[in-house]
Amino acid sequence: MDEIKKIKFSDIRSLFPEDKWDVGFLTKEQLKFCAYSPIKGKAQEYGADYTNNIHFLAVVNSIVLVRSSPDSWDYTLYKEADAIFKKAGLQDWLPIYTNFKQAAVSAGLGVRAKNSLIYSNKFGFDMKICVIGFDGEITGHPEVVTNTTGFWDMCDGCSDCRDACPVGAINNEQEPYWLDSSRCDDYMAFGDDPRIPSIKKFWHKNIHPEVSQHEVDNMKSCTTLERELSFDANGYTLDMLEGVLKDGVAIPIPFCRECQVQARCSKWGGQFPYDEM
Ligand code: SF4
Ligand code: SF4
Image (cartoon, rainbow, N blue to C red; front, top):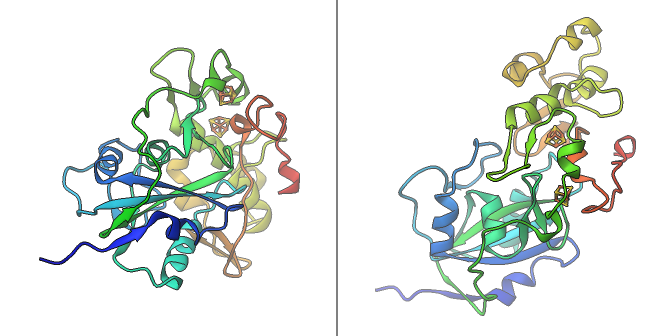
């Protein structure tokens, strides 16, 4: 029988600069728990699929990575993490696609907030999460977190994010809290507020300005996103993982951040500087 390889958590931790990354650990059972925690839909899929199923490839344990990211549509961390592991010559690992919110909470890297997001211990809401599974045993890892229920203490008695949402998508007056994701997605993609940006406004200005304003005003729903918002002109392309690319380089696309910028829980003091992004 092959001997199980071992790798020290501290050796993995040292690969990821502290100012940009936070690193946590999941047992095999915790990863199963993440896999059995439903996700609302698959997007930006990358790696072995550990969602909405019963049986999964077996891994021994996993690493959870949280990377600082001020841009909401930036999933470049998947490939960046891969490159770091490859460069270090580590073997027997694979990227895993799972319920990343649960993974971050289970690894003790963040808490659930009442705006439906995870508040990361290190980067607040300005971050993205990924998971890497290992066939070998990770030794010297942080203590395993056992209590992953409940919400962030800071959210007690607060309704600022709900009040700030322009379309009433956040339902957190009473448990169970839930987010109306179609309302949120439609607004992020097709919102018309003069102050809050949307994907269609960026698209119209930069990619297809020849489309009439009347036609753009009538675009309201994500069910038509693929047909109407083609990123295929002026050097722009769309990569579902990396987001919008200009001449092959990922660029930030500004859209609604109203529920992540409240003074109580962010550095933005209630006003996200959309114009500076
Ligand atoms: S505004 Fe921030 S602190 Fe208040 S409930 Fe929402 S996420 Fe929690
Ligand atoms: S991103 Fe905007 S639309 Fe979506 S929940 Fe937050 S405030 Fe509401």
